[in-house]
Image (cartoon, rainbow, N blue to C red; front, side, top):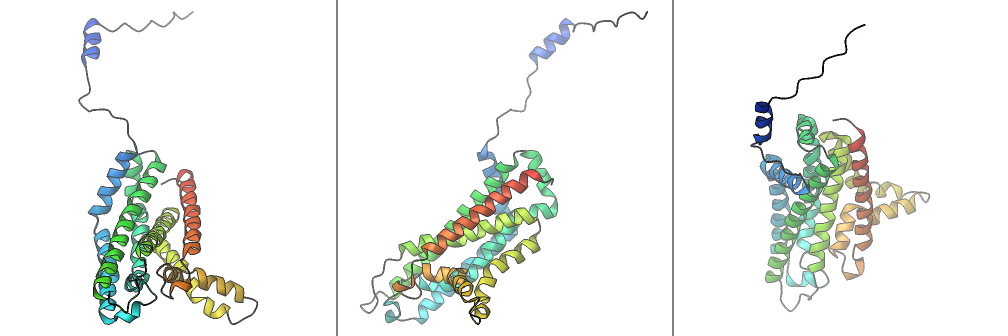
Length: 280
């Protein structure tokens, strides 16, 4: 019969003293959302794609807006707000925010750096939340400041007696909110597809196809109603309604903005669901 295994020797007094006296020099802190926000802010401000896309966005919205403002007269603003010149540049500039939104997530998957991100922050939902918040705040601030600047300069140039005094503060907020939500939608599509070219192509289809298809759908009576809805709710028309480009009777764009909020919320939910189910 084999003897029972010997019990492990108790630690010596020296070992007990060393264990009790040791303190790690690395401070241990509980992580929170603020750390993820700081990390994502560092990322988004340090990559060249942000500077390029934001720079082109400003050139389109501010540059084109001021150029149009310089070519207009006081009577051109009888029934439209002074932010209308920013509308033209914003129709083009929204593509820049869509591209940046996709790159915020898909670029990390393309380079493999997302593994490092999730190793440093295993709570994946926290990382995606930080990306959405940082991008949305950046996109909204840049958009709102651009529209506000164009509106203020245009008003100073064309505030004569022939121009109507139409409140345009709401167009600044709603216009910036609309293009920022499009960018968040693109961010979530990039998170779900994990491929930059595929996500950008998908978002271009989301923005451009509803603006092109009505020309064909209105030909047939069977598809006319679908074509009319697409015409009312596509991105260029939605921005036109927000900026009252057709006059005060053209609508406020609130319905279009609500629809985009619903679609973006669904995309955010899908991005969170897939993020937890798939490997990196």
